[in-house]
Amino acid sequence: MTLEEPDTMTNQSKPRASAWQWFPQALFLSMAAVFAVNGVLIWQALESFPGKAVENDFDASNNYNQVLEAAHAQAVLGWKIDARAEAGRPVIVLVDRTGRPLEGATITATARRPLGPTETTHPTFMAEQGGIYRAQDGLTLPGNWDLMLRIETGGHAFSATRRVIVK
Image (tube, rainbow, N blue to C red):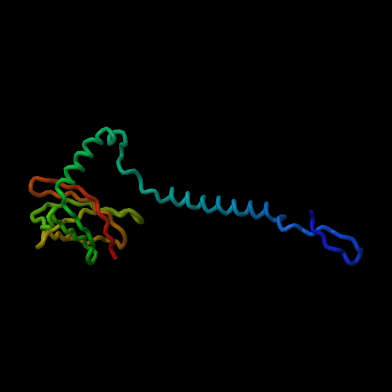
């Protein structure tokens, strides 16, 4: 059944335009917008890819059992590592599984920016009271920094990565 409206001039009925006549165009434009947005997001993802975690994936996978053993040994230690930036300088707080400060640790660190201009530095940490270790040098640029840490004390070693934000 079609809807018709009378034509007052000729006294004849003519079919009224359907509201669905624009549906194909609307569907096409909606899909084009989805494809355009996805294209932009894919381009941005490919342009900002930070790279691989390791250079040789195959060799890393062959040593995966050793990686699991090291992770288990670290979990047994139960050390807690808190990292923050104060006045642009990284600060590490170390405590053992009971919450007591870890004193006398040696910290080897690499600080790397995950985004923005590539920047890598190797801060040197000095021990303070209560398991606090403060870097002598500040991080040069504001923003996110990843600290790759190796902590050694009491014949044990612990590796961790912590993110700090320099304001």
